[in-house]
Length: 330
Image (cartoon, rainbow, N blue to C red; front, side):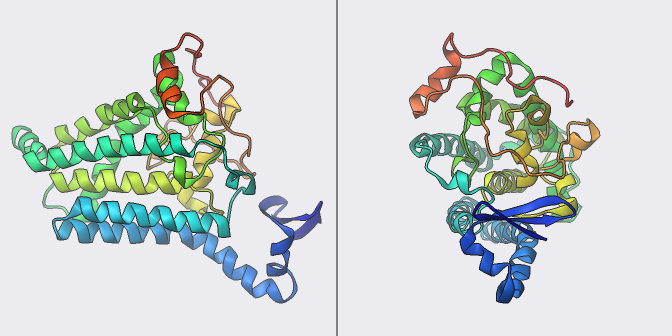
């Protein structure tokens, strides 16, 4: 059902708001635009799985061609350009399209964190750390499995550490100081995907990657896990109107992650999964009600808008040492 109010239109389904559109888009929903609106509505369900599938396919080509890093970087840049365009054509929140003045800081965080992670992967693959660990571990990894099942297993194992690191960063004051840099973003869009303090990034790596080493995962699985994590991460933060249905209970989708960035502790203390929601569901930290997530996101503590200020802020005395999000979903 379409409800017009104050120069905008609310698309309702079963009493809940599905989307808010501008006057210029109403023609696409009413009258001769009905067919077009159905196509757009269907597209919102197809975008996320289609884009992720393409990224995964190109990653497979890169691994097969023995140029995984090159193919990954090309795919990552193309994904960013694609989301930049789609965010303007089909935004989830038009308010988040406005410049927040923090693009230089977001870019610097991304280059530092993604660069650091890639160096670790490339160096590890080059010197064969994974294979050495596998040989010492007694061959625990099921190399006879199809690659698809090995990748799924790798993602699940890594998710144990990623979930733990993320939840601890919210519930333990010393780590919250660094994780607050990410949550201080006043909007969610593809560009601030990598807005993490380096200490926060290192913590996640230290709690997840060693688990794969202990399991004896080969180098290709490390490449797969890090690549898929990067792709899902950018998709998770994008400002695109998409719908997911039951996928919300399996993957860390934008619909799920937007609740995680809520200022309300009862909403934000949830959805810690990096790629998967299985541990949130099992440990009862999953939260995705059937209503629109808040537009006003961020933290209530001080955070500079410049890169160097954000890097040094966790070490300042005026930075809150308490997690802004307390334990327990109310």
